[in-house]
Image (tube, rainbow, N blue to C red; front, top):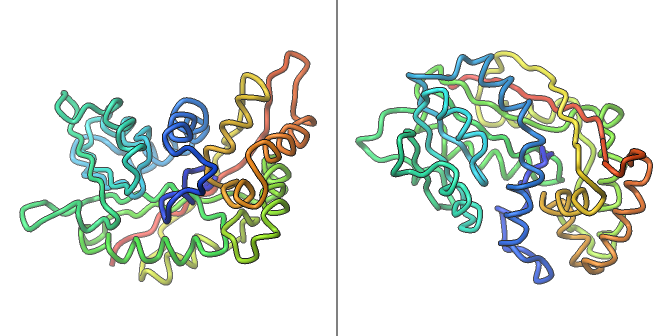
Amino acid sequence: MTPTLVREHLAHAGSAPPRVNPRKRARDWSEIQERMLLPLHETVHERLDVGPGTRLLGLACGTGLALLLAAAKGASVTGVDSRPEHLDLARERLDPDGPLDARLVQADSPAAAADADTPPYTLVTAYETVGAPDDSEDLGDTLAAALPLAARGAAVVLAGWGPPERCATSTVLRIAAKLAEPLRGARTWRPARRDDLEEVARRAGLRPDGSGRVACPFGYADTDSAVRGLVSTGLFDAAIAATDRKQVGKELTESLHPYRRPDGTVWMPNVFRYLIARVP
């Protein structure tokens, strides 16, 4: 997603299933999947005029692409994530001891990103996309811990999948839900609802202040890269636990067939939605 995605958005809430290699998956996310959200990050940064003077707090920052883009514009960025394998890759990108104003914090709660001497953040981003049954509740808890660190009127950006009919990847992600059925109650993908992001903002006490949609096509060099990238999102964890990595790969490969081009590349048009809300 989302996740968003497309995100590694499911993995941060708990330990990975035993059939998933967290470090390999983090590398696949960083090298293959994360760039699919580049149009989303760039659109949000342009709309909010991210640059010098921006103090950005990135929640579940993953391997740090969005932070890197903001820091390159002159923003002061802090990323929080509980996954050491993701932060290791983020450090490679951001080099906290280098010229960029960047800080990375490994923690379960964003409260660890500030102390009494830390100025309030002017922008909080939650690019982890809402796409599983309990994502909204998890994100609400994270926001509750983050908002006291933000300045009054600060922007909070939430992101999620667009309408299923506008997201070709929705047909592929249904495989995740189907294969995970034996594990009743397992965390897996679900289609986006129109007011998902507004509901999260409302529960957090935020004031909506605009929204938008961004085309984020998923393009891969070949089917193997597509499978690796999609698995890296965490949206197939329950399916892997219910079956195995080989079965998930086989089903995914078959579902990707309609999106294969004659040259072997894979192309899936998608639309993502973002909501800008304000801290009261």
